[in-house]
Length: 532
Image (cartoon, rainbow, N blue to C red):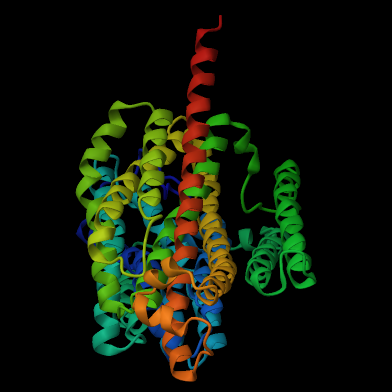
């Protein structure tokens, strides 16, 4: 919950809110629910959308990465937009844009139109979440803040819990378009309600003129270049021109964006100075730097783990969207049930060892899924999901406390924007890398399985459930078309399962690296405390 810290904090002199304001804030929480839900609700329907729009398997992940990449661009803008347009105006614009983009997603007729609409949806959705949590500090008195924070937090946690199942149910009964059109009525109600209930506040349109548009363009171009490289790598190779040019260009632009933010911040408050998207100077704080890196990895393993399960359950096991949602819901339920324990433990433990425990558990949950077979289903996935769901709350609370818990109030806004930027940046990268890995490894494993069958490997035939007597009888004989048609999906499923297992191992390794970094930081901090 505290990962979305205020973009522009209020003061202790804020008067108590009246009933109208509470109703208006409740509508903001509905918008928050819609924005968080839209990341989860689409996941279970990815195979259905892929089939409906005739999207290739290598393009399926763009439905998620386009949304996450757009959020990376808009999250740093949320604080400035709230100051420029006022909280009321910014929230109304964001919800209206999100609702319109949802309609465009539902009306999409091909891959391109869906990705464009999904990108616009992510741009507006990335503004809604920070603004909703900022409203806690802008609209309520200090005594009312805990209740408001709790309401927003419950909505933010309820969305990922209900999202997979709700997405599957809507897809099965009303088609995948309903995943987006379900936002229309709540969106209209929220916009009208905010206009009537939230009090007007001061705006500063001049801030829009000072926005660092060069930095914004550099960040957007960097993300596009890196995502293109991750998609092209399995097709043309990591050293191919179509991979190297956008990939290296994207990384250089990302570094240039970092340097640009430093330069703009150094320009100070003179009249001609630009307003930077983020101030990277806060990363000079060791705890903030560790927490930001950990949050980037958390974004990568979190979004990638869910994506892996959807790929396996949809393309290997053949579950429909509702079946996928039923299984994925276990993670959300575990997260919701363990939240009170995680909150209690977070208050009684230092943040570094708390993060260590969280990432070690998440890595263990990923490692438990590295021995999947094409026959693995619900029973095999319950325990790993329970472990990851419990670990997720620890990771979220621990990294947030590590990043923001020790900072002065005036630095929290910028640090929070950078912290959340890292999470979505990691999520977009993680899905891209995992998708590339699946494509590359599945092709190699498919060729290896086919060669083993030609060589008469009985173990491989047993993995494919081919009767051994029939397999031995046809060994050395030409394969007829009917046999080839029967074997190809079996080989494809086994190859993809092997690729999924390797991807789980990579996610487990990434989580373990963060746990190791926390362990090193813990010993360094203990050593520093012991020195005079």
